[in-house]
Image 1 (cartoon, one colour):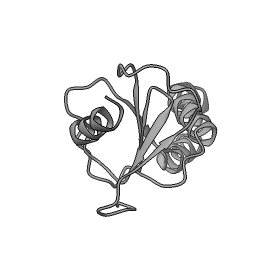
Image 2 (tube, rainbow, N blue to C red; image 1 turned 180 degrees about the vertical axis):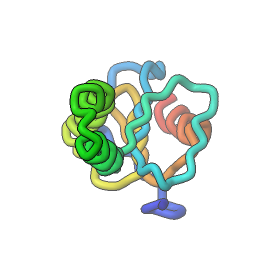
Image 3 (tube, helix red, strand yellow; image 1 turned 45 degrees about the vertical axis):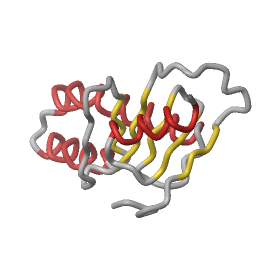
Image 4 (cartoon, rainbow, N blue to C red; image 1 turned 180 degrees about the horizontal axis):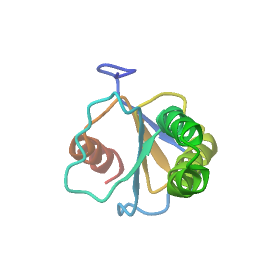
Length: 124
């Protein structure tokens, strides 16, 4: 789901955008969205992942495989909550959102290559 179908919005997360080199890309989206990751190293944050993890944990509990189930899902829960905290830190208002270097956000794009091109055009 694209929130702004043809509108692309850059939002500076911090006031000191010092560097113009692309160091990190974080992609916040939903599992139902189509994605085009491209060739860039991207941290993918599926913001609806917790529901699937809760269902998987519930199934493990029903089968009384508690120890193994919890252990297997712990890393996935940690990853989800790390993403949720970052989304809150960045004050993301819509999905999909792509965060560059922890400083600039672009909304409404599911294609990393396109988003990087727009970022470079805006900040280069």
